Image 1 (cartoon, helix red, strand yellow):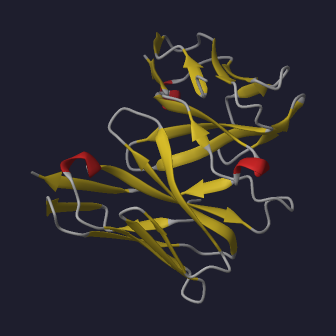
Image 2 (cartoon, rainbow over the protein chains, first blue to last red):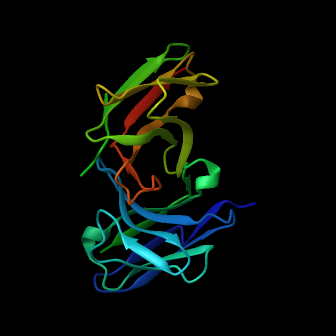
Amino acid sequence: NAGVTQTPKFRVLKTGQSMTLLCAQDMNHEYMYWYRQDPGMGLRLIHYSVGEGTTAKGEVPDGYNVSRLKKQNFLLGLESAAPSQTSVYFCASSSRLAGDEQFFGPGTRLTVL
Amino acid sequence: SQQGEEDPQALSIQEGENATMNCSYKTSINNLQWYRQNSGRGLVHLILIRSNEREKHSGRLRVTLDTSKKSSSLLITASRAADTASYFCATAGLNSGGSNYKLTFGKGTLLTVNP
């Protein structure tokens, strides 16, 4: 049981490049989330999903897109990366049956030059 | 905007002492949760307290919730060097589309426990 995994762990992009971050969970959770964490800002919700095929905007969605084609996977895309998107990205999942706590992945450290 | 605000921003104590962190929030909640983050790692859930509860214990952790003051505190007793981490409170609001699956995190308290 791996929990929540994220790929890749580190990435450096140039401004304007695109990339996709992959999140996978093996706990059969309905809900999945993408957060970004910046120094002094805590965690901010980018997008979330309440089930396969559904996504919704969080607090800071601009510049990001997401897809949830399979229940266990949640993808975060950056179509044209900007230096302001330099951050640590965390994926999380949860289930009402599990008591509402969220389970986090190890994070992806992204630098945009 | 951030819902929870932790206080203090940083706390340094000696091993064996107790550590108390506070969290204030602005709107009505369904539950409040505390998470720990070790440097460079993901967040780990510590404890959840529901809006109709006033106090909860888990091992060396004690959480209180005062909904009239919109505040919570996390007490870690007999601290250890391994407790060194950032601690975040997170609130699940009542207006999250009828569900409490969305959390809003505070900025965290950095706890340093010196051996």
